[in-house]
Length: 213
Image (cartoon, rainbow, N blue to C red; front, side, top):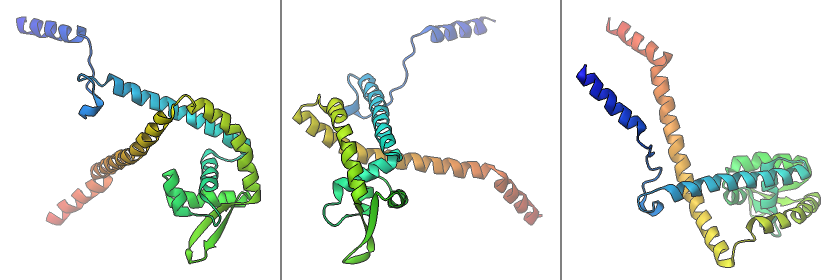
């Protein structure tokens, strides 16, 4: 009885103690005096900014009656096409998406008469994307809408701050890709583990026993 009473009192002290969650990062550069408070604030601010950027994109896309991803694709082609057009691969790299995604979305924009696809003169295997006259008119009208929004969203940054942010975001795009690859690997391993515990594993074990018999 005495032993149980001591354990109960010890558990009560543990339950009443202030909760300090484990650190969400371990890299020294992300911690301040051993705390990840500022790092967590940064992550939550990025969540907020990401949501607001998506709200802006959805609004602008709705004005053109296309989807958000199609709006981004149209803007990317407008920025990269120059005189001859831009390759599917270059657009994919610019938007950090797959070439297959660009191909599918560009097909839909082609059907809307906003994009056209041509073959590269020196290599017919390469498709070049460019805006049609209708696409150019649409992009120009949208840019008139987006300019004041961009000025409000980012205009508080000084030139040096903007340059620093641009460089930081390029680094984060690269490092976040590695994080997503890591997550995908974990999901794949979890799927394999689930399959090992599923009916296939049981059938295999049963067959193995029958073979041994």
